[in-house]
Image (tube, rainbow, N blue to C red):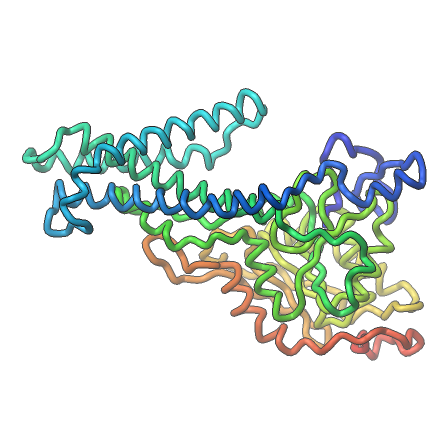
Length: 443
């Protein structure tokens, strides 16, 4: 969970254990109770179902435009390699007109977000432009080799790239519509008491990491021709957090604390909302009752506090660290030395175990995984508390797209054998037995 709430409305001084969470004084007990749920949460089941259903025809039209663009290119340049029949010629200009309408609509949406909503376009918004220019340049160079085109030059150089890029835009938009629909339909946990002990995996992270975890898989579009969009057909419709939640599903469904003030819960882990000014005791209790605790390494003293608490409270095998990149991990590792030393020096008490010696994390290995994921690897611990670092990623590539569901596949391959040996959850009811020699094996 986040240790920094960057929302201006919630800005205030941090409290407790240097968590970095912002505090907000409650004017009354009723206000304190209301703080557990974000005031701006606006879920609509009807709207969610509409968006989910509308994603399918949107994606189907995008796929059709991409295929028609490729086939028109083939008919024009390499008739023997055409994918469809010649009947498509009667519909080509209708498809081109539809592609122009899609492109105009996309420009209007980007302009509306920039001018009215004051959300400047990101690099992702310019992907269709770069793809259009690459395909147009490819077609212009290819046309210069031969002058016997059966269509006007603008048909070949402009309309084919336009149809290809419009197909890409609709395919990408369909996946985003489906994610938005699932956000409206996501389950929200109203109270920690609704969670049965040992029935969930607790996912802790910085709120700042929510954005990269909502990423959808993208192709690299290495092929410059109209066929560059075809690999998009293989892309997963799940965000990285959804894939992580699915990978942990055999252990226990994933639960996370939602960001205060967000309008819709993110998809993946089920969200639980806590008061901004009073969260540490609840998180500590959630740790004790979770079958597995997964901490995504990031900045903030709050994550350090949670890590030190996890070392004190959990058996070694029930803690997993997710690593986003080398720099973030090394900073966390350096700060963790102090946090772990403090945890080791704390006396064992009710529900508290001694930390597993030695309290240290391994350095980031040499090299980098091949996949461009927001999660590069993980650290897991064996029964003796010894850490092990594994990289995520795959070398399998198809048309510029590595295998579908990359996070899901990587976590299952790298951590599946470890998680399969996770013992059933048991309550910790003998605090007097806590000692360094036991290393917290009893739960």
